[in-house]
Image 1 (cartoon, rainbow, N blue to C red):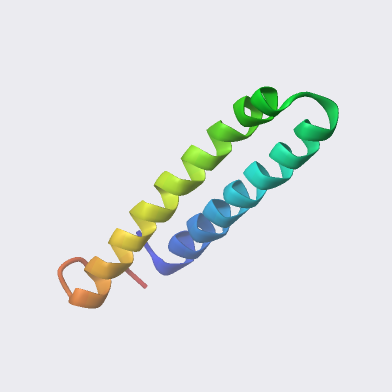
Image 2 (image 1 turned 60 degrees about the vertical axis):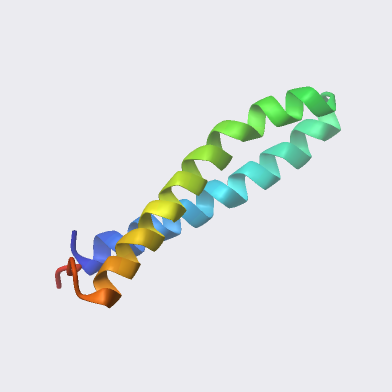
Length: 70
């Protein structure tokens, strides 16, 4: 993984997390609370998993165990 891909994935994770909050809010305007939760959960889970992966990958780079390429 090079640094530009790492940054793109970080932006994607942020976008997915932001999308989950926006979709939950908009779905609550149109449908009920349970439906809003069902709409927002997939992007929240994917964004959260991606954020955890990137955090661990960044920690491995800082510790020197696995380098993120140029």
